[in-house]
Image (cartoon, rainbow, N blue to C red; front, side):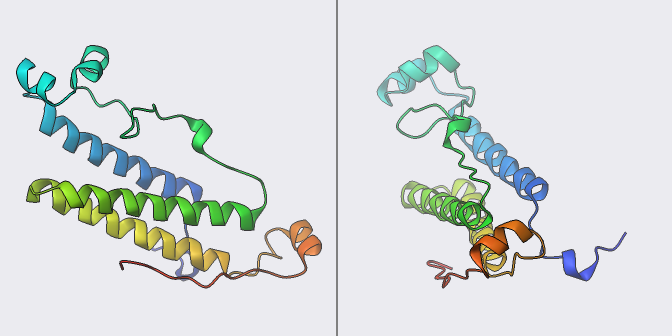
Length: 160
């Protein structure tokens, strides 16, 4: 079934969330493939022993610092402009994480998928930016009445 023209570039919570989970799956698969055949000596030499004791070579979502993933990192205010700006910031943080990975990745089998994911974050940033430049009065009439109009930040897409 063809998608109506006005919906082709629409970012919805469902489509965006599904794609972001796909990103997690891709990165997790790369990490697993890189670590699944480590010897005990390699694990110890890499400083990977504490992680290995808890998770073996399974992929456990955590920051590079070791801080486990938590839904507490999500911010939802109910204000569409504040939430869109939070989304814009999240996309840029993800792009920066991929940039940092690429600084260390010398294996093309790692670098190429990371480059793809980085490009997707840029597209997400652009789509959220477009949504942020939309008159929201039809969607959020009470919010619009309180704010008298709409907000559009200048979008600077670094590294595109």
